[in-house]
Amino acid sequence: MTATIKIEAKLSKNIVKLLVGDVEVFVIEDCGNPLGAALFEGPTPAAKRSPYFKDGKVDTSVNMFLVHNKGQWILIDAGYGKALLPSLATIGVKVEDISTILITHMHPDHISGLLNGNAATFPKAKVFVSENEKAFWVKGKGQTDADKVAEIYGTRFQTLKYGTEVAPGIISVDLEGHTAGHTGYEIGSGVNHLLIAGDFLHHTALQFFCPEENASFDADKPKSIKTRRLVMERASKEGFAVSGVHILFPGTGYVKKGEENGYTFIPIQ
Image (cartoon, rainbow, N blue to C red):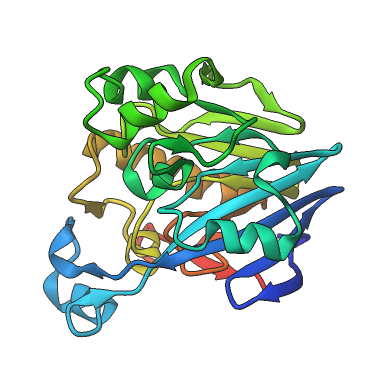
């Protein structure tokens, strides 16, 4: 495995810049997100499970990704919106500069940042989710953030198909399981290649050690396990980097085979 993606610059305590070939990728931490041990379920014996938690919790992040390629600014997930606008300002990007927003799935910690009260945070951007994700979440009743995003963005809220170039240099990937239409996004090729894998896992150390561990909010648990193993196996064999929304900031690293049919995550430096 030849690691080709590394931290090129640290812009602030919650923003780093990566290069994937000629593509700039900024990882932005929206906030921390501690999760309780009771949220996880799987075959790991209690004696092996307990060291993965401190005081019954594990620290995770809520990460977002800003991509700059061929003159376009593309946002992948919008978090809760806690640090989104100040972070864009630090990078030197205005909300009007964002042309495309790609959503991994429609949980609040991925889409709330799209909303500014009853208005769109991004006045010009098109927002894309998979067809299955829209069908599951958008009911037109206006009660959830998903409904509000669909209503407020109107014709700029659109669906995508898996395996297509949804923005310059970005390919959508079927990573269903966590939700009905959970989507990943691939940038680059070969080892100079990054897969932004959304919520394919929530506890980095535990779920790389045992991919059969699920979080309670994984909608389709067997499919979540299958997807998680697929991401890990591909990344370990092909040598590309993986980013996760809930992997501790900067949320990105490489994967290698580990012990007991598991894997090891190696954060980028």
